[in-house]
Length: 295
Image (cartoon, rainbow, N blue to C red):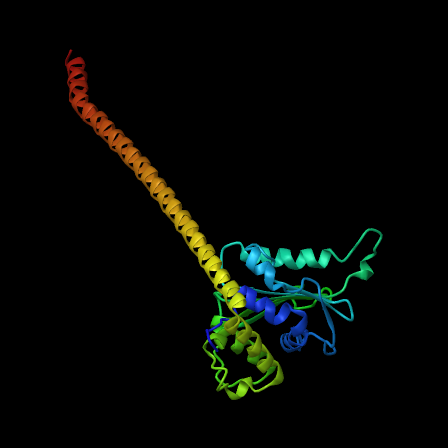
């Protein structure tokens, strides 16, 4: 390829899985990552927000996720997110709930609701407590009993995926998104030797070889860099504010401790003075008592 292309960049990602010409790639991807959830393979999907190369040239705020519906009216959302931030988990849940709830129109009953799957490819880790790269979230009780089989959320953390031997199509896709930028289209590895992966590489080649597509790719890279920089600066400012508030609280607490210590010292001094005063007045009282006894 003329230029190295990263399939994780949002415009490339959406061209891979969200364009009409790559509909079979989306079907293959969904069947691969949802293999355990689907009672039968997906054979057809309607892409609800198809990729348009012009939108990424003219509109930096383009919708970059992929939404689709299959022949059973099940809904799918696929999104790539390169950077983790504090409210991202809430956004993930909200997006799933929003897509799920939008199925019901006026006059519709709850039996119209179909399974909704939200799949997120993550460039940074969301789950810090373990090394598993795949996390599936469904509505379950404390015993693992599922409330209703209406889909769920699947997080795929690319940084944690380090399988050397590719065992299935899900791992093939994850390795492609993680390492695709470094692949040489002239000498593809054995795990890329499938119809779908060769088609995916041809999509990367279009961004590499066609000047207009490559300019769109570069524009998205620059935009994403700017967004990462803005987010980094925002988080740095938040951290600085947090540190300043912490210092202010510590200084206030130290001042209160000093004030309390001074009060304790003052009370101790007054107590000692009272004790000394009592010791001085005691002999005088004894002498007065003796004088009274003699008289």
